[in-house]
Length: 130
Image (cartoon, rainbow, N blue to C red; front, side, top):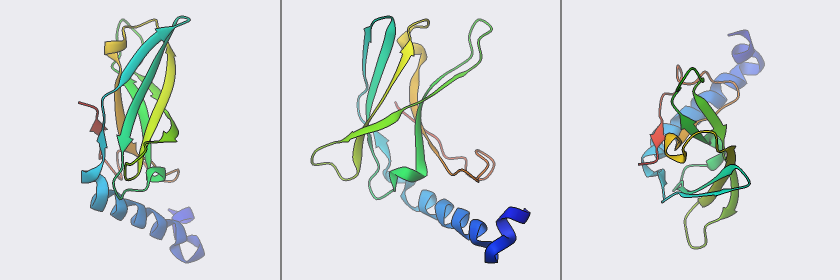
C-alpha cells in the first residue's frame, strides 16, 4: 500500500489507468489461427494476436497447459515478433517448448500485465485462443 500512495499516489493512478484501458478495449482483443511445428525436439508455437485499440504492452501472451502426471501447470511466455501487415495492432507471438508433452496440451492465452498489479486479484480478464 505504501508504494502505491507515495509520490502523490502515482503508482495507484497508473494502475487505475491500466485497468481502465483493459476494461475499455479488452473486447477487441482476439487470436488468429495458431501454427505449431516440431523440430530438434522442440515444439514451435506461433499465433497471431490482434489488439485493436488495446496497447499490447498492457497484456502478456503465453502458452498454458494444465498440470498432468505430477507436473506443474506450464506457463510459457510468448514473445512479440513481427507486425501483421494490414492489421490494426496485430502481431505474431512465438515461443518454443521441449516436446515432452503433446502440442494439444498447450493453449495460447492473453492476460493483463502490469508489474505492480496482482493478477488475477486486481484484473481477472483472460482470453483463451479458441
